[in-house]
Image (tube, rainbow, N blue to C red; front, side, top):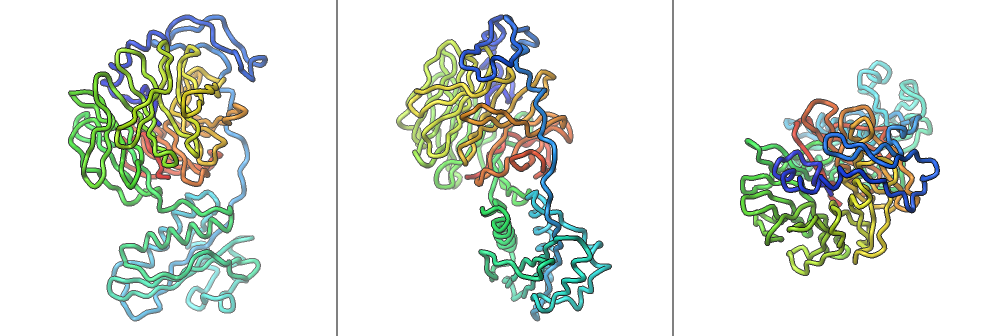
Length: 474
């Protein structure tokens, strides 16, 4: 979950200013257990710049995005044909085609050809919808080794019957998909098309796609206030959670459709939940709490709490009961917990080595292991649903924020973003093949993006600025 220092909120910064001094001390970096220690260039003392320790050890800027691109499959998408008597006054055909194009492009698996490219080569009026009536030879002249999406629909009042198919142009055959023609309300056409896209992705990857899932985040409101929103991963269906005005930040998904978030209020900064419009305060007392992460397998919430001592990691039930402290290092900051799949381990941020690094531990606080050894400012860990990788935000030696992954076992690091503004707050998709994140590449205010797990295919989800700390529903 989001690391509290990544918030550009003066209230939170004021809460943590006393802790910054510890990061600015001149101290030798902790290299005990570092698998890269022999290759690392270390210095006995770190320099202090802007109140932060910027010890030049194991430079992150030397890690670059892996070169090369996996070939994408050429795909032709034709607007479905109305074969019924009902009038398409709602524009079903164009809506379906647009959803298909956007989803398949965002998947990173397909290169969708422009309609103008194939209209000059294929007689669409005579072209059919079955393997015996489609002119595969004409389609094959559009692109080599391509696939074709065609379909039909009928409109009956507020209902639509939609049939979509995927064809192998070279082989002249139809793919067998785990999807069937659907009769649905006009308002649910988007869901049906997402299901078709996910079935096609399963043919190519062996796993259902993630289109139609939602991402929750914090967005700008009037003044300094922040609201909680969610949106489908293709950028549609923006929903605003009705909460009392204030600075509502760091949302995550809770049990049973609830949302857990942090609210900064006059009476303290605490963790709350909201479901069906009813808001419940989960933490109370002196100090502040933030950065919750819920794991359904154990029905536990991990979060950061601080009173007069430094911030520590706790767990609790989703109703706020059974609060249990699991870190006890009073000399350092412990924050940003993220559950592993199965809820057996927690990744978190600690500056016990002299500057923020990513660590893991068992759910009871034992078996603490440092997993990042490159760079001196690593934050916002997010454990992959596959269990192998932890995505995180790092500030490199050029003071740029980018997204990396680290292998939880070997500590091998890969870079996913580079030279495109500041990129922060990664969150994995349910299948572990994609991430969402915030980026300033299109302006000073961050926007939401999506990328595959290599970082090679990146797409903007929403055009609106000021969206931060996205969390994918899993």
